[in-house]
Image (tube, chains in turn brown, purple):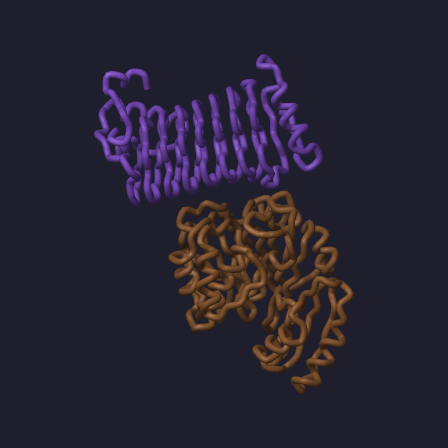
Amino acid sequence: MLVEMTSRGPDSAGIAIYRDPVPAGSTKYSLAHDDVNYDWQAMSLALDQQLKTSSTVEQRDTHALLVNDADEEHVKHWLSEFDATIRVVGSGESVEIYKETGLPEDVYERFGLASAAGQHMIGHTRMATESAVTSAGSHPFATGADLCLVHNGSLSNHNRLREELMRKGVSFGSENDSEVAAAYLTWKLRQGIPLKQALEDALDDLDGFFTFCIGTSDGFAVVRDPIACKHAVMAETDDWVAMATEFRAIAALPGAETARIWEPKPATVYAWGNESVAEHIAAPLSSSQDGSSAGAAL
Amino acid sequence: MNSLDFSTLGLRAINQKLQSLDPGTNEREWTITNPMGQHAIACGLTAPISVTVDGHAGFYCAGMNQNAEVTINGHAGVGVAENMMSGIVRIKGNASQAAGATAHGGLLIIEGDASSRCGISMKGIDIVVGGSVGHMSGFMAQLGHMVICGDAGEALGDSIYEAKLFVAGSVESLGADCIEKEMTAEHEKTLADLLEKAQINKDAKLFRRYGSARTLYNFDIDQADAY
């Protein structure tokens, strides 16, 4: 799906894949560093000593997956103190986020994702408009445990909103407008506001064009701005549900020709998933079956 | 019947083949297989040929069409039949945003639903939609007819000029300067003819007509014949 979308955005690509959940009480961190030779083992050893935990760390190109059972906020704080050049790009029980500059095909190759399997996956390929082409400015952006956001569009009030969120203690890793949308959601969710409500609030507070796809622990949500400026198409069969900016991303999926295909309405929150999402969001159309896969490409 | 496989020939070879056909060609029936949602399929045709796109088409399918009859056996992406001049484009499924945008002539038939901004800035095309249309349809529509057998979304006919809109179902809201207008026997005849031409089975008596209140632009009734 994502490789087919290469011509929409050759600047950078990113993937959030939900797979291999860690045991309850543990957290999986997706970490990134500009130096491909960064010594993740040394970091992990130092972390284990100081936070009295037992981590596993596995390097994947410029990224590393760190798993331990320490307190998530403590770990994130420790990482920022230990080495501010480490970026935490995702965290949760099952999500893994990989993103780099370059074509989707190359990013897939670097992170060994061509044959990766998972319950669901969100991909994004970027044509930069509002900020520099960097790994940090690439999508998806983490918005909380097992949550991430990808964005098609451009926000016009992101500078003011970023300042407001910084005053509330939210930190930023780039000048990217989509990161502001992600930070906005993070801030809302931290206050205990359900995802559906947070997305509906975003319709009021975000100015500009957006189609968002939000990955959740067991599904995903989609919301478009009230004008529906940016394209989006959904396809559903009994076996899978997919969302993309263009149908050609979906066309190669098995059964796509006969799938139910439709466009999400403007200013309407859609969601697919099982229990935990259902708690947050009453899906207006349908929920996917257990074990089905979801994919999205923007 | 000539068959062109998109997956082996690609877009340019197919469009160049179809665009270079002589108007008097005897090769009048063409099918494009495996369209896979790719863009700009069967654009810029000028010969009076019949082209079937056998599957779902991507953006701008059958754009700028003149004389040809293009049938899409599936859904169409953004801007289908954009700037069509003449001929017929029929979509068996649904159409995405901005179907028939800026088109000057011809007939666009969408058997399913059309998304937002259907017929935006239409300049003489006739559009018949078997289902419903999304928000902002008929935005700045200048000339031609749009027939909607289902419902119309928000802000139908916003800033409309002289296009005529017919809706059988409900209208969520009318856009600026768009009002319901009297359906005369002449309008009903035009509508019935369009439905027949489009082979859409719907009683013309079920429709209401909408058009411009003519308060947003300098309209001189003495110039009405010019439209």
